[in-house]
Length: 296
Ligand SMILES: Nc1ncnc2c1ncn2[C@@H]1O[C@H](COP(=O)(O)OP(=O)(O)OP(=O)(O)O)[C@@H](O)[C@H]1O
Image (cartoon, rainbow, N blue to C red; front, top):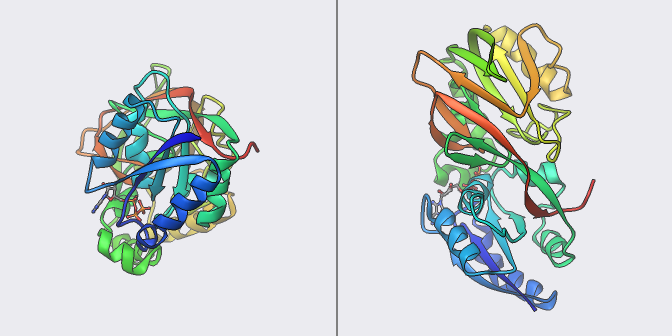
């Protein structure tokens, strides 16, 4: 029998975990994994629980919830030596990371992926002193992800984000940014947002960073220059098709390290949660964490 620590957010998504917990433990048990559980109680708790689980020497850790819970678990693990592999049960409202990794949303299938023990090493991103697994970003457009209250997400799912997005469009304003990579000033301009992607699935858009690879040691950086509402709608339409990278309003490059500064106050978004403010130093940790997922 292998031992696992299952860290889950009881409020994630539509609270599926509350209903499924016994079935999940049973299925893992039948697959040779004896799991003890930790239900998170609020912000930061999953980070502490994950750090504790590594210290206690579990064979594997399982994060069940949305991208926020996964981000917290990764933050608890990242700096430890001898990391156990991480399984993901994507039970949140948005599960961008799971989608990018081909981890099924259905709990039985995602449990089976962990039971099968097929895993791959993935890059992690570091933003100042915090880690991200999927995406870092900033600018007014990215702010809607953490303005959606948890209860609204539980009730309405993904629709809550779209409603907030529409409300937000009216008040979009650009942000002055200086972006440096490899010590050189790359660009100084006004931007609607910047995204530093580790995977190709961001904010529900599956083609936002179409060429991003989770294990190539590189970020795919996408920044959208100042534009009006009509241009924004045109770009969103292009982004849905994955045809936005060549547009003159879009800056796109790859790097393993970069710095973003601004004369203004700019909040950072890490995997959809608040992650401090600019200035930001971003660095990739190549193939740092082993995840249960099929090799693609
Ligand atoms: N018991 C709890 N009550 C309220 N909030 C919690 C609790 N446990 C954890 N949280 C917080 O909920 C945040 C969001 O959770 P999570 O990402 O798992 O799912 P979600 O709300 O469905 O949304 P999303 O998948 O869009 O991020 C976490 O970052 C965490 O800080």
